[in-house]
Image (tube, rainbow, N blue to C red; front, side, top):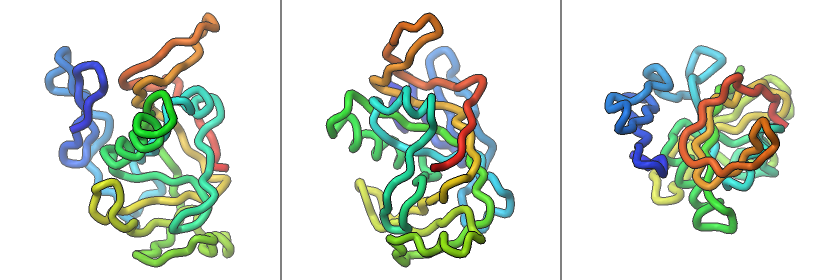
Length: 197
């Protein structure tokens, strides 16, 4: 369970992300049952998550996610199928770091063909050289008090949509041009689409 900062909770239940508030005690189901896996047959996993600083809120809304220069499976856009893990990563970048707050981005990504590194490392991203796969997945070692977990790294040029943001201390420019701080879940409509960088 993760607080939304306004008295509500995000709950993962049978693979579903639910936002539960006093007004909606049964919550709002944001996804159907799923279990992220490298052997997923469809090109999309229903939702993946990316945690970062709330200071990045407006830029991500306007321009999409920035790619990482490289970690365990090399350069690319990093995502997880675990909302709580993304929330912890956002804490690390924002609340516990130099940012004003935290942001979890909820993404629907066209993963395409995928290579599974297992527990191997490929910091230079050699898996991208053949051009056959859009996505790399693998098992990340324990991190942020989480056991090993599956992560996804997506190469440049892959289509995705940002369907929602969970912000604590993020600022967005409103239609009238004023800036407002946003705390809580924002479901984007229309949802902006981008390509990974």
